[in-house]
Picture 1 (cartoon, helix red, strand yellow):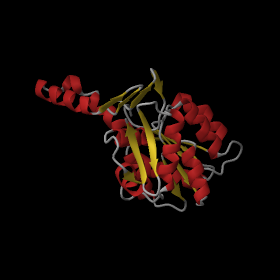
Picture 2 (cartoon, helix red, strand yellow):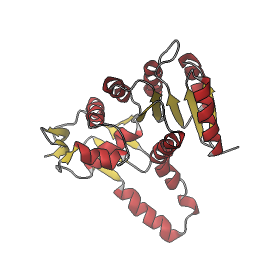
Picture 3 (cartoon, helix red, strand yellow):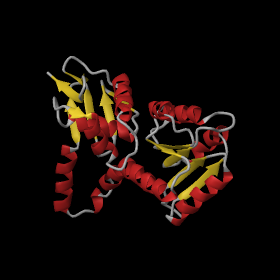
Length: 247
């Protein structure tokens, strides 16, 4: 079916892949399941998934390696689905660019909810922007106003949430949705301090089961990509949280 969102499932357990595929197809997604990392990387360019569900313990190239390779060339959302539930595993997965982490055994309905949430964040804004030509004139003007509000500009930095793009020192940056949303949220309120829990609630949602280290990991990745300049930086407020500091 044309226009269906494509989801790549990477898991060496056929029963799990079949279960996920069944639930996805019921929701009218197009699903492709592969059993190992090598096959995932081989089909990724041609299948062009909108989202990847990735196990960590794979034969050959493990899930960490697959996630690293995908993130090096694409900002497509990645949800890690793994039996490895230690904090170290979760933090490492997020550091490598995953957008969410879910432990096995899992509830398929919860996985579907997370998939929908991640896809909405990654693609909802661009889909809305693409409908401009079909809107009445008044709606187009209202959308232009909203679009202006969705663009935050500072010296050397432009964050555009309408098309999920970041321009830093004249260069387009590849940035996963969660990183961009965190940057945009902080930059919208310069010099306001947010606790880690506030950032978790606003960016990941109240039902997110991760911990505050998720925020620390994403801030670390943002700082690596956009160190700031003499006019602004993502600053740590020790014992509290973070702020987008401007001078």
